Image (cartoon, rainbow, N blue to C red; front, side, top):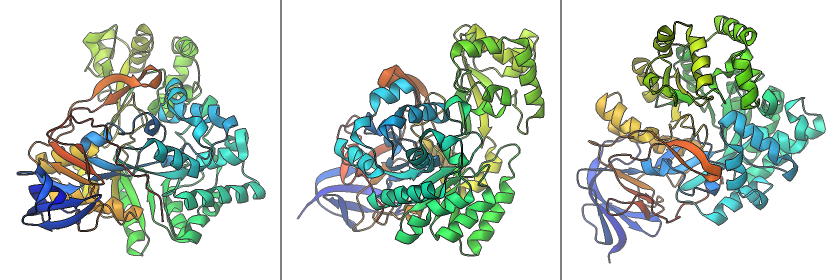
Length: 551
């Protein structure tokens, strides 16, 4: 008897890291039911000359809000991604009380560059309060690809402590209440718990996000429910109160898999030293994983919300300020003098040779040029040139600021390292500043085919089987009988992320960068249903995705 669907004639790279082999993949309903030389199907998708791989898994996204108005979670689904995990860095939308919605919106605006008008118009706020209700609300609306999420430390703190969550330590009774909230979330299906202690994460009025007020003792208490349930993973961004050595304490005490970010190549960050320490912990039996980015981390930011530059105190003090106040300060000689001093004392200075202008309404002749070159043309210091051009553009100038992973020689070893997960795509966040959720096609095209820094089989494994194993998704990440039919068919000779373009397609007239023209992605199936084929327009309307819950 013919099966529902057959993917015929491709090279199967099954997600295990083993060599590929030629064959047909048979799908019945939502499952892979056969892998053989020839299978008859009522529908046939040709894969001649292509790789048949498991659908890609993106473990580091911030699609918590976008999922309500964009069930495809674009651009991820256009690049072969069939599963995403939201709630990273502690910024889940739930649990959330009605009284704290504005605080959450302002937090996401400052930390993740999400526009308040977009959030207010796009999120179905009245549909949830608890984390379980949030997952139910997403499930009720439907998703095109599979969606799971971490319960976030900042959300949990805000839920229990309210406006004081960003001001003080928790009392013993509050800590017990937070533990209960985390336990409820894990019981409702959260894939884990996420937190951030990074000094770069500033909320309303420039105050620390709530999770930064939690110390190691608090964190160890909040992950106890994961150990007790023997479920879920932990995602950490170390920084102030909780530092990188504490990652290993958390893993040892929780007995749960831990991933920490960022493992990046950038000035002032001894990534090789941290990688050696991570390797040592893994050899000792600890289930701990660093996380790196596939694409160079380059923020296209303006001075209305200079996210990466708020490491300079003078700019950090303007967090949450109006555009009018910012413009006044940018033109003030005394404030500029303070900013110059901050820059001179910065651990990680701005590289003016690499920082370029990517958009300038008043000065299109500057686009593509470094700020060092622009400053020379204007006979000024690069910092003054940045401020002056921004003021002349009404603060609409976009500066391309490289942050990390722009040295391919240094980055290549991280992509193949044991104990390093590929992530940090940040889909759903910083949407007007970067678009790195297209990283799977960058890995397969740039790193695998063009640079030959990673084999095809290992690249597929890093995108599929490895993150599935880390997350405990036993039915995904492999091409094997009985597995969920999440499948990506791509042409290895043409696969590519394509260009980034700026569009306005979010609620509230929200602007974003997208990689909408991926090349080489021939077919994508989610739970046995094609969401993209070579025969149909890529934005098919089916919603076969599942809300993935821990078990």
